[in-house]
Image (cartoon, rainbow, N blue to C red):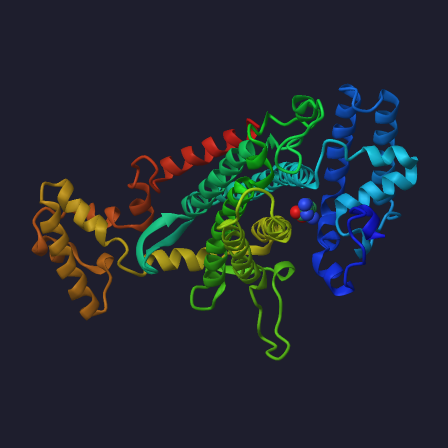
Length: 461
Ligand code: ARG
């Protein structure tokens, strides 16, 4: 039982409710394969340094591999009495290989062990999440490529501002995702440092070789200070911050899809494969996918906050509070992966942009007003003067129930002699977009170049 796993110092058993309260096996079982991998490296190091015999090291490693197989086959399901995944594995190892199993924990503590496990776990997960980001970027890019000439109203303050290429709008999300991908790569460098061999907090009396385990586990570096090593969770906070930012990006896109699919906008139609119905209103088709993504964003941001508050005020070195990092990390990983996948599917096959509705939308408003001011400014009228003049025109048009394109050339000329026939061309939506050809702007040439560059970026991998 548990008493034997700790030491003979204890005289009576844990209260059953306290045992449940203390145990982390229900969730840290997710670390089992990383725990085994870390233990194998430790066992090999013990053999390499002569702390155990080479034969014992092999026995330990073989037994640990057997536990991995048992776990994968569903044959190893440790219960609450094991307390945590580390005790569970060590106990099973001793059942398999006998007394030599009791040597595994030489020169090690669960504190450096669990730190190693989470880092191995996060390395793997960061790799997978970055892959998922690439998939997401891929569908954004596919959509952008086929929609360079599609126009959509661009908004500021959620008021119609200037029309843009739909591709330009989508590529904004591509760029956010690119930063997310890069940010995770940056976090990876702080995750990829080995705490193994730091012991409980102070190092060990045994002649261990920390570089040896780090090399086997492919850690880039090792922690320089054992107390820092066992109590640092900066890397986890950074990961959760990156995860939160990813979610915020997905949530913004979700919000747009939700708006766009409303009857008021009607810019997109949701396809049946990605929409849900109502239990009472037969006509409803609801955007549950983006709504859930938007909702789940709160969870991940909450986990970041939880870990920050958890760390604040923790004295050195290890404290059991740190056990609380697991669920925050695991749930964030699951949530980010699930949301990236759902959004990727939604974009790939769940929406259809309503092109007639979009082209009507960009033609029926005053989002070309800036272009009239620019027209005059390009012909020598100071911009502020032009701006004021166009403001007056817009006011008159609104009163008359007209759009700018409805004004006759005489009316234009009456406003300012600089207006010529080409004003009609200058304020046509397609031209309004094409003309914004400054670097990074929505002009078709710019957008084409951005799309090509993005494609090359993805291919270069
Ligand atoms: N289950 C613990 C955790 O998740 C493992 C480390 C426990 N160490 C200790 N000295 N109590 O953090």
